[in-house]
Length: 458
Image (cartoon, rainbow, N blue to C red; front, side):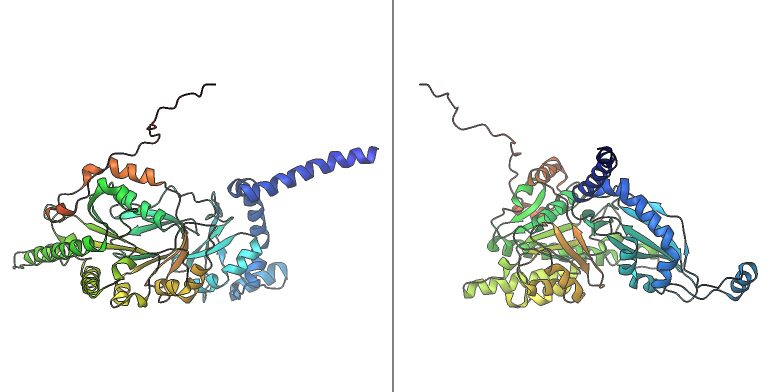
């Protein structure tokens, strides 16, 4: 009986602690990391740093002076030297430490061993970034941060910069229109593409920017944001009327830039410009962001007349994509499907869209159209997105870099409320006035019933 009592006294708390740790790790990974994962990973890193670096081939032979000193002082065998480790800095999602590379090493050597370091130290992921020549930073991620998205406090937002999602390395994915003027965003139904679009609109609404929408799904995606939109087209016919106006606006802005370029010997060098950002602030036109939702609807035709209209619209979109950046006009092209079979101009339009975001798609061809010219592994990552994770996407640009991102939840009512509150910021653009949508009243959370219910009587 005494042995059973002892077993219960010792084994009971052990089982309780183990069960609690397993529950935390499965249901609350952030809490598990802060309480148990962080100290365990730190101890594992400190205890095995030298051997792990040697096993990964990240050590070099010691200098002759160091070898002589070791032999003279300890008479031990001289071992290879790992990169010098800096201070370990814990975070709410992992660990950070800097390594000073040994002579002959480069950051690519450490990046190539990231997967082996992940397994050796028992963390979710390891990312390597170059801080300065000879110094790299290891970012160890303790758990899957994309399972429950929590945006970091410092997101790097600003004018024409919208922190729209979280990267898998715990940094914010910022949509910077000055750096990446045009973007293609693809995603199947319920993939999270609409959520991504909501974040963009809600992030740009408080800024001095003109928002223009083309939503050929009868406006179901962009109509809730009508109070903040300068123009909205809800079918291909209206889009065919709106696009020439935007092209004319772009041409007028180029005329303004050329007028400013009437260079004389007295004009300072800093006043010579080739885009609107070099103009004086009082002369600079307001930037315009054009959202095109369901771009395939602009390419679909049923008659010969529709085909002529389609060709005109595609030509105008391509012109805006080619020349719009200098005029402060930016494109955000979204759709469920995008491929060369849409017709003439599809591939040409895609070539002008520098940024690429691919959510879960229904076919590999769409993923290849979005990411195939960036990296083949990015296509595989996009095709592997599960339906159970809406908002998960692969983001990249034509420079070749890509990463997984996930958009946090934002309800349609909240995004529409932001547009309602910032309706007074709609800029005055006379050319777009005929296309200004009628601002609807603010949605009521609990609408009153049409009929007043009465209790039933027996």
